Length: 356
Ligand code: IPM
Ligand code: MG
Image (cartoon, rainbow, N blue to C red; front, side, top):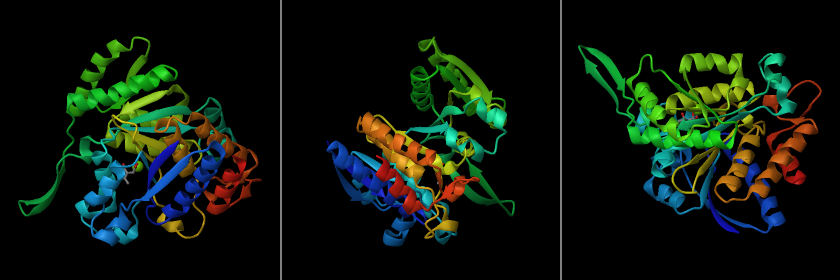
């Protein structure tokens, strides 16, 4: 199969991990007879340096012309002082919205080899951690009105959090469908004791649940959910939630699995053209030191093969290679534990590529 892949190399440590993901894809091309053509796309800090804005229209257009887009991570101290609209993160938000990617899928699954790296107690980890956060990605407070103004001699700021029924329904459906493919348990996380948007989510989800009688559907307040994720994560199968809650909970969920450096994500809309990225940031503190863990990016490439290109076997070959390398005791610094072999980013990429 021939596929055109947009590649956003990203900022700080990001190019180091993207390089490893492409190395792995090269092995897949050879082994399975595919051809991936890469289109380099600038977004985030790199685009600010090149074009003065985090996602110029011509770069978004390039993404839209690809079969899918692979991204490392963006942002860093160099662009910290910029105003909201000019920041690297705004490029990512524009990209998600411009590609219509409303559904972000973030798996939280413990690799048994990394159980020791989890900050949770052993008896909690042993009960199993394997759930997915389905995060609404192009609505809510991220895309509401942002304003800073002066009132009565004081600066005041407002961020509004809008959601309409259709936006809730389309992501709610993904939540139910994801649950149907797994263990048929769906938990909707909100703050319905305070927020109107949450109460609307409840109303729409209650209507939707009638279409999925087999799914064991429940609701939970976000503060309680944050607690339950570390107290009893084995209770979760699929969590569906709004944009900002999903952002926060997915960082927490990744950390209990041992390292945020292991968690990939997919973002999809109505077509198979998606965006695939690790959920971690650009790790400016270790940039250029060959220390960053490339596995989340490599697994994001695997997700792209599976969900956008229908290459399930190829995706599984990558996941198996990661599993084998972890079995052999190789670890990057973020997931290092006693008795294991410490390797850098490049070496980890080599080991995984060789294992396929
Ligand atoms: C993420 C990130 C982004 C988000 C930032 C970089 C805008 O934290 O993908 O989780 O908040 O969505
Ligand atoms: Mg985040």
